[in-house]
Length: 166
Length: 161
Image 1 (cartoon, chains in turn brown, orange):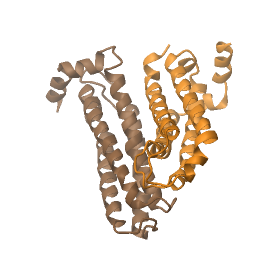
Image 2: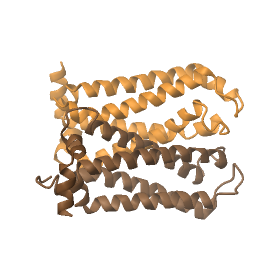
Image 3: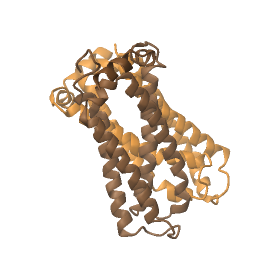
């Protein structure tokens, strides 16, 4: 991995993201990642609490439309996340917590699909079956874990770049 | 005046706690992001509905999620106050902090106008109909204000005194 880190950190995109004083470089990418998080996790929260039985007056079928917002948030974060990774590859890829975060996100997305399948065909205002409710509770816990993992990345890294410690 | 506030905050118990507890700051930051997600997941989702998204959801039913967003706001108000108490100079002399407060104020005034003038009328309009202009305006202002709050919050570290 070491030669890859050396190469990537020397590219002009990586250097610009890390060192440019422009607010459109690193700060803007961080803003994208934060706003994307709010919509990605936020829409999952709305979906999960409805499945858990909160406000049954929300028709499940109609709430599905918000999956588009969820995916918009996901792609904003995939894009901004890749840029953050390009800026500080050593920092992320040498931290085990980073892989845990990615695994948790994958798990959360799989859960979202599973829950959607469990409640498909139900009447608009129906309560979700116990299995779907359980998955929704696990999903909420998973997103909390994603947020903690992401936030703690900044405090658990050992190497900032190939040349600098965290 | 600001210096007096700074000195006062610095010696509050919550400020002292956050400066000294080893994992205090990272855990409070995570809670701050969690509160943000609860807020945008309910208020943001409601704002999109006001803008005309997913019109088949009855406004009243979606509005039941709002208490979750309010609890998110209070989580963030509390953790935010702790951050400011721990390192008051980083906020009181930081222009991004004042942008953030301004955006929060805009969101607050907007929601008061919404409840005073638009909300009750909106509950009487059937679903599937395009929301009235006042509702769309309230939703748009709210959404932009919260995006502003998040952006200014992220910029805090780049405008440190």
